[in-house]
Length: 144
Image (tube, rainbow, N blue to C red; front, side, top):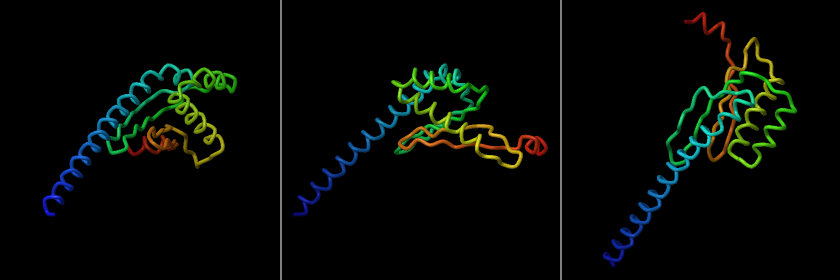
């Protein structure tokens, strides 16, 4: 009976090791693909009025990218609709653009005591999210 239990434990360890290896390799691939997709998307993101200013890569069981954007110019609704229509088949890019546009819309509805929207951070992972980053630039300059 002890030998049977040892065999069972060995089998479980092997299976666990195989599963972990598969998760790690698929996580690496997803990160590489996400970074490549983001790189390929730059021209369309720039046409939409944004530039990528920072990219953080979270290497974990569920890998994530944190892409920070700054709005450099505004586009009108007609241009926005045209870009979204053009990129509709590229889900990755479309989600990024929708997140950026939604953040800008929220910004128009929010007033925070002399603070400006400086950056938009998109979390690209299992559950995408957007973070609006407001700062008082003149106060930051005083601290320097």
